[in-house]
Length: 476
Image (tube, rainbow, N blue to C red; front, side):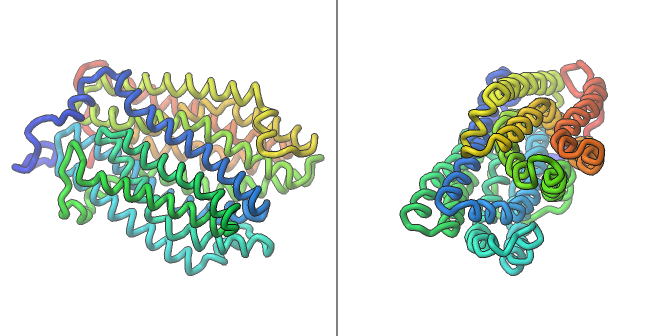
């Protein structure tokens, strides 16, 4: 019998209150309920990343900040593996709820958690054993190495807890509890902000104190997240659900592959872009250090604006996935359009703020030379110019994830990072020097948006205008 039509005695006979909301509540209220906690979490986390660097920079110095940058790729690798199961699992969970396949929904949660614990634990052991060679691989100097080793030894034990938080949060949001997901994120960020100055300035533990504060904060979020496991509203998890069903895992990986590829590609592109700024900056009046430092600040500022897109699209995904699984195409389209409008409005406001107050924002990171300020302001303004198109592209990618179209989502995620940005970094500077490096990301963002929009138009027409889905469901 086809799995899609198969039910068992354990299946729930009626919709839970949370499913009823997803199926019939006004879309605008759902977007607010799901997206606002996500936006708050993402914005606070982005601001926290900046504040954390300020504490380390003032308490330890630039070598301390250098150490965090060298160790950061290890954390990015763990996040890439986690996103594979968090985004893919969350999308499949919502689809299965919409289809009333509750047993499959339970396996999504249990299998994703177990797989993340396994793969991140292996990564953590490898990182601990080969920490020094890994730091050297990502450009660590002899001066920075002692700090990087101290910081890394305290950060690595926290990788499994923070990754479990990430994967569970995707299911907690899909289960109708976005505020709980927000609390797990904010609790760690707030505790870290409190402990950082205590460990660095009071106890004088330096980068070890910063790493210890981060790990303790991640453990707090971990306990809050796992406490939700027996409190799921739409399903009831059993120990058997934590035995991975590799048919389900394969489908999760297919849906999450686009997010994984995007994050993994970022690792490579970070190194390539940094080297390009150093190489072409050295040939300009700014020198090698100014462009590299300015781009780091630009990246942190852009994360704040992109947090609105991240929060909105992650909040809309469970609503889209559930209603697509239930066959209610009208609500699917209404949810996407509402989320896209919210994303554009918030990102335009954020962009306007950074474009209008660029110099004061740059000054928050320290008072530097006129030459530095000149390039930093120019770099930030250019990067922000088309960032809204990157947010729209992210929404399109998440839409395809939500409706179970992993190939489309993978193509869209690969467009910006691999197909467009990589050649732009390699080609544009050959003709325009340092200015080519500056414009590489905006050029990739805008071109990726145009191509992604064409994919969306085609899919939009396929969905039709009817109340119920007419096109075939995604293949298993």
